[in-house]
Image (cartoon, rainbow, N blue to C red; front, side, top):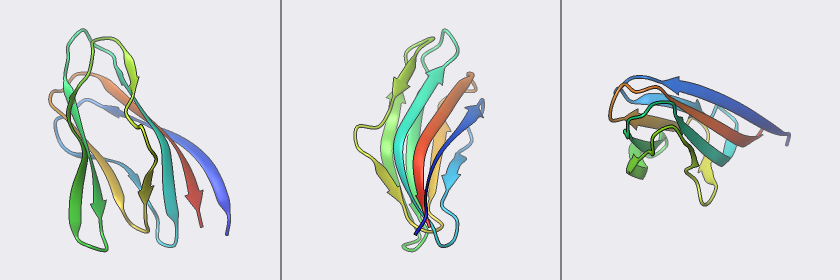
Length: 108
């Protein structure tokens, strides 16, 4: 088994559900940090969900969390695990400029 620590970011400016991170076939991911930065004076909300592809089900892990204007916030209190082909998704309430960054461990 190989362990690789990684970091990625996604700029969100849409109300459509957006895939933030997908576990590739044959890998598991442990997400250690989800940090969101609201780059506007508005207070949009964010919803996070994980699609468990083996169960064909999507689970909400954070529902309509209100973001404070012009701030960054850590959204995780505990790690989130993505199994093979699971998907972490985000949905914003508005088209305000928001950035989501992820720090995670990939296990293959």
